[in-house]
Image (cartoon, rainbow, N blue to C red; front, side):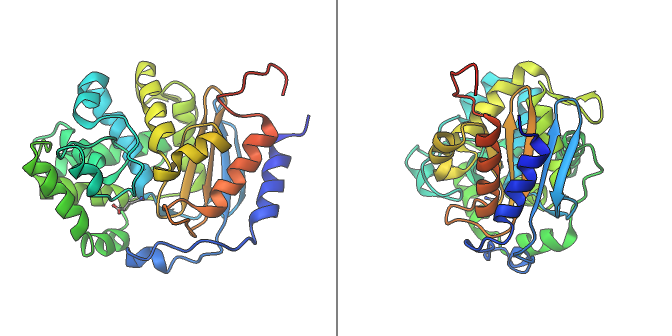
Length: 311
Ligand code: GLN
């Protein structure tokens, strides 16, 4: 059988020069990240790392942070409380949709779009906003096995252009679905999107989920194994926004994208693939990242819906 490293290299070589998609531009910082950067990493549930290309380049985590804050909220409040307040259904609409909120009386449908993610931030138990932020940042570090840092440059760029997310926060508040001050929650949400991560750290985060919440690199339990299936289900339903169904159909493993160009795919009990390439499709998912991960998952027979014994 062909080795994973060979398949990863094939995918990298095949797609690294491919054009298509555009950097996110509504956040000024993201528009000027070099579009040609391309990285890929895999971390196994044993902590083995395989990486190609720009896999150590640090990029903005953006929406992938939503998964980590969701995990923290479930750890603190339990899966039922989080489900009843934040939901677990796909919206079928863009990640910053106000319509999705309006259609459901101001109740978020999923923690993996902006409305649900900001409400999830507001659920994190803390005395004040700084403590809430610190808890989220620490949780990012535990998942990635690195001292995750806020980028002041990314944060500044987002904080000065996030009026749409502020509006979503106020709408949530008006519908009774905010659990801390709405603009403070939006500020912390914006910070959580503005930390930097590389492909190896992102794959480590994914491998922690693939491995029942136990980080195979730090050898620390990050979350309880009973909470992992809820998080992976949310990723399967909404991890690539209104393209999540296409992703499930084509690839068949839970994924999560961010407009910084990151994409992580979790292969339960095996490990996780993480890619970085800034140009995005219209839904906000990395074009090359999707192609590379699809190529590798198909070649390796990684699809949660497979029913064959032999691939
Ligand atoms: N910070 C970004 C936003 O709120 C994250 C969006 C994303 O990655 N899809 O718009």
